[in-house]
Image 1 (cartoon, rainbow, N blue to C red):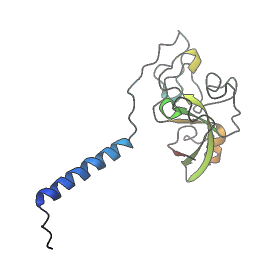
Image 2: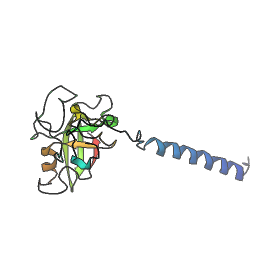
Image 3: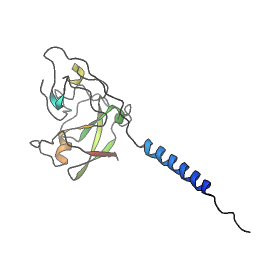
Image 4: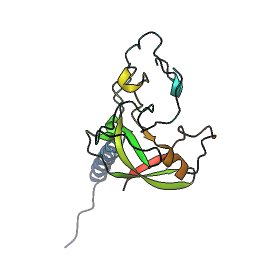
Length: 173
């Protein structure tokens, strides 16, 4: 029995379906920021210009998880402070995912090295420039704030301009 030749229209339809499917798959992998969020205007004399902040007394570049540090309040995951000598991070609101990443480890890649750190807090992408947030602006939507231990494990010295500001990539472990 002889098969009928496949028509050009069939190939065109198949191509359109494949194209539509691939664009949906690619679109599902993108991070879509929620937009720009403005913080509250801080009280007179209470502003933090660390991290190139527009709204918010000069502060440190990296987040401190210890009591009295610039991380703000207690950790959202467990209501505790954490030593800067332990590799811990705070992830931006979207990545924090309503505490679903609490106490889970992520693998951070940067400066030609990799290391694991535990998520213990949220870097709030929705609020800022108030006492609870050390008068700092809201975090960007795609950030992990890391303790000193993380930067040291990545081989970045505190005297290096990249300490606390280096581009890194990360993944769940």
